[in-house]
Image (cartoon, rainbow, N blue to C red):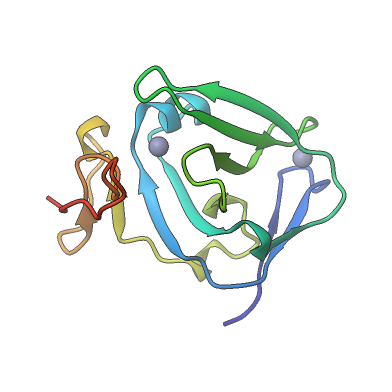
Length: 147
Ligand SMILES: [Zn+2]
Ligand SMILES: [Zn+2]
């Protein structure tokens, strides 16, 4: 696989992914909608150490979810405000990267949708996509059943 590289809008933060993503998905939850100001987050997950960053500054906003009480950490470029990566209290050894920040977003396909319960009614998945009402993992860590 060609190396996956990307960066923020202004170019001060750059990254290289050292592996293929563990998963790629669209997340339609209200947290993603509100924090990005748009319909859903198109994202990939990696092991924490599998993404290498340059020394461009990233700031962190910590959000505590009312729904499940855990913290979510959004790491953004303070110059251009791009959300470059996110980490979570729930999965501390994982890192979320945003497909829209890739130099070549066509490197990544998405056929998994999470939190369809919260998706805007005018957003639709393809017929053969895998769609979950909530997260693809249950609270106990078991795999959720797709719709
Ligand atoms: Zn930037
Ligand atoms: Zn979400």
